[in-house]
Image 1 (tube, rainbow, N blue to C red):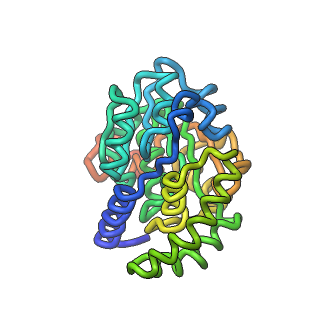
Image 2: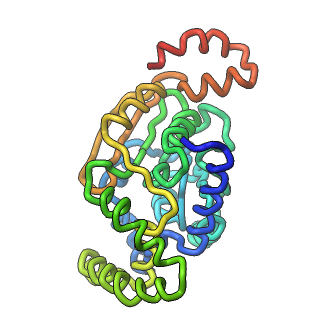
Length: 285
């Protein structure tokens, strides 16, 4: 956990990073077949839990790949991101969606506001993934569901980012180093993605992938056991777990009671019921 100044500085760098390199890789053909561009666990989740009347919060919407897909299911959607440029791109893609620029560490919504909360590959880019997780849980209504995609500590990407990442990030800080990366690492990275995508990945899309996976200012990695503990602490029941995506594993939770984050927030604001809940915080463990 970082102090407030460190968190603010890191969030500012993260916002600037994704303003320069938004996680955008879709082609016009991807947009016309938007369902096919979604990860399979996300498609299943949306099919099962999102209805026409669902109040949905997409936390960390990026340029709107998931947003466009969600609009096929519900019009009651609010999308949040820390990157201004990403939000501009998302609005161009889905102009009638409500977009808000905000940090995942302090979401601008009342507790129990949404039937569905989606955070797909986002909390691990925040200064404090646990705090971000708690905020996602707080804004979900009791009985609501959460889709959480987070980097898997037990996959190879952890070693790639923590060992090779710092070297490439140092190189990228000067012109000569950046030129070296664009002449060596990036072409190789693009070729790998070109093969994996069946020839669809563009050069620009590969650059954005590279800067998301390797150059991002913050990436944290979490085990199945760790995320399950977070869920129990926040009054969430695990409905499904899917590690099939590899570097990201997916958790689907249902909120069954008021969360620890919600209780502490309510107590600090003088909620009339908060004394009772604070006295029983141990019940949320």
